[in-house]
Length: 409
Image 1: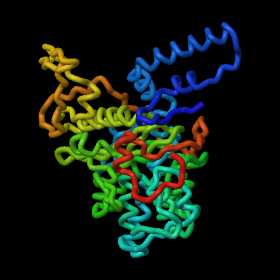
Image 2 (image 1 turned 30 degrees about the vertical axis):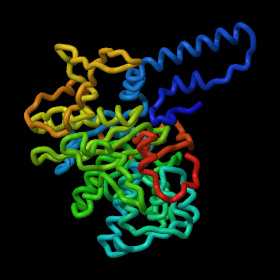
Image 3 (image 1 turned 45 degrees about the vertical axis):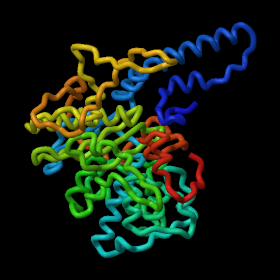
Image 4 (image 1 turned 60 degrees about the vertical axis):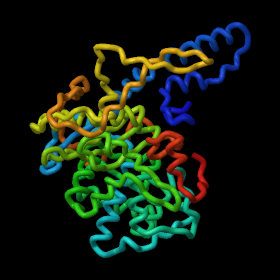
């Protein structure tokens, strides 16, 4: 049974639909037909309620969230922030921290060549698909991680800095401890599933905050919207960029065991917040919820609310007093009336507009940091993974690497 994932249209399906409808019933006869009919009707009923299925993920066993003020690190919102979670591609934030540190210390240069080993090239998608022996520069590797979340590049960059990915993961864990990330263990540079690779929302938000404060001259990479690779223009998986007023990074992630995760940094009126949330059932739900959390955080810091951006407006559409105007549409030589499509709300924000996200309030809970060695999450991560799967299939085709892919998606 597949826990979660994306179908060929890029739409995340609830686990109950795939699990129930994907079961093979071997019994024959009328009893089997009745069971098949009941299963089909159950699947249709669930499919007709996609948003309710998505809502159930926020507050599920794999959900956690935190919002902190970036300057002081004070916590504004805490919902299970110290519960163990799988970091997925958020792991690459630590990979990039190590890369920025190596650049600062002169151990590598932006134009240094990162060679793709056979081991690194074998990583499953998302990836650039560079063949063994090929390579790219350190700066290209940084851009590939913040936009496409390329697993093969993460492994190769780890080998470039640490000698081997295993040694690099040990370096990542030790550095995380020194940053105050007491409940995080790394086992690879990409975030591909590993039973022992765990973190918390608090630790990931702490890392996001330190990336900004420790490397202000490198942080701009997280705001990259497109990365040119060969003839391809690779779009950043982080749709909060441009969709949420003030957002300028940091990273998204996804594996089946953790759901859709994100760490976001946003600044309004001189106040910078860093938030993290785990356990979304889709990138849309995850981004909407992250936006609602940040709205609450800014409100608590006394920042005037803004008009909802495109992703937030979609979460709570405004009620219309009158139906939209109709326009004639030609069909089979007849002129019919068809409701006009609602115009998309412009993404430009207007200061002082009311905040419409009050319905997604998350209670504040102050917790103490847990022991340095975190307990394992309840669910073992399945090995089928699609890192950074926030784009639709059409968008992935447009942003696909010019190099061939060797691993099966």
